[in-house]
Amino acid sequence: MDKQYLRGGFQTARWLTIGFSLILAAATPACFAESAATPASNGDIDLARRLEGAFERVAEQASPSVVVITTKHKAPTVSESQGGEDQENGQQFEGSPFEFFFRRMPQQHAPDVESQGSGIILRKDGYILTNQHVIDGGGQITVLLKDGTKFTNATVVGIDDRIDVAVIKVDGKDLPAAKLGDSDGVKIGQWAIAIGAPYELDYTFTVGFVSAKSRSGVASHGGNAYEDYIQTDAAINPGNSGGPLCDIEGRVIGINTLIHGLNRGIGFAIPINMAMDSADKIIKEGKVKRPWIGIGISEFSEDKDYADLVKGVKEGVVVTEIREGTPAAKSDLQPADVIVAVDGTPVKTPRELQQQILHKNIGQKVVLNVVRGAKKMEVTIQTDEMPDQLQTVSLEHRLTPKAESAFGLTVQTLTKDLAERLKIEASDGVVVTDVADGGVAQEKGLQRGDVITSVDRVPAHSVEDFKSAIGKADQDKGVLMYVRHGRATTFVVLKDSK
Image (tube, rainbow, N blue to C red):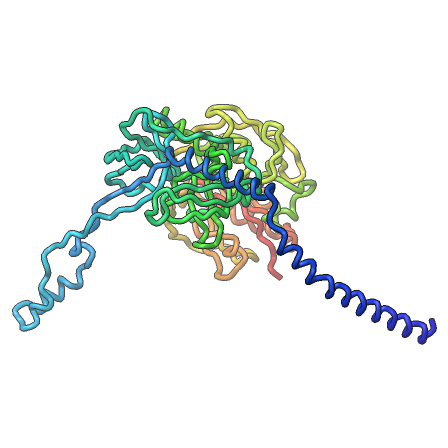
């Protein structure tokens, strides 16, 4: 193409651009002047006033059902908090000119420790819903209502520490009960209004939006299985805990429970449907009973090494461990099984599996669709009541190394005498006697006293079986081992790090 033609085209484009810029510059002041001179229309103002009125109605209607909860308990005396060093120094200098400076002072009682939170009135006869951590620590619980009514001796009906809720009771009548919404119908982007007592500023009203739903893994207790938070940017601060998160109609859609740092616009609330499920059980039975099957789980895609060993599965939930004496231990379920459905309902994540089980009745039979290796199968399990505490057994490690593998493992055959000496209930397999520092086995969490029962699904009754299976395994691809750890059976995939 002719260079002169190109040069002429560029010049023409440049002048067109300059001309357009001059026209725009000349027109812009007039546009801005016209815009500045144009007042907001009555329609805009009316819309703003209607929204303002909606917020005022929420404050007016919802606030009376919100309570301020103060807990008071005894603080340790000054002498109790000082430890033993001062007392020893006092004895050392007794009778000397320095005795005065080290003389032990009489006990001084510090003022009672008070903490404050919020709650909502559930029923007219005095049942109140709040966070478990708000009433933690015992002591006197005082409840203050919006109209100034005070109850000084509230009683704890029950708690559910798995989702951080509690129900307390005051001796009241015709109290203004909260209007409850449906948290299952909450949508991201809708208004979210928090009411509570942050920093002892009673009945503070803040507005934001629902930022997200079904948040998990955000609580300080580390990924509670029942986390299902509503996230909001409405200002939530210490003291808001236990108070309501409301929608634009004043209905409670969540119970505010925690913040992710201060002044970051990230707060979390327990969905009211979940909270009320626990509250109803607490009021009726004094505790929350949940069904369970007794397994540890993780998302299939999280363990890349194991995912490489399973064909034909893209999504599902991996059984990472099976606890002793549980419904799962009494069934045909095995560690490393991939659960893809519960009673025909697909499950892709641990939360989906947990929710499916939680909606079953205690004692109900459940059919799990499972993939084991390349085989698809069904496993039937009968749910049981979840125990209050899950116990583990510590092992004594008086072991003698016998054989080693390529993964930094040292094992020996588990005999009956060795099992009794180590207080291991398993009687078959090889016991881990040593784990090399920095090795693959250590990275995967194997410990001394763990019992390996199979290698690549082949039983390992002895050291010879173990060595033979390791020799036949493809260590680059990964070796699947079933492991007995304490009172649970789990699995690991060990892969050559080369």
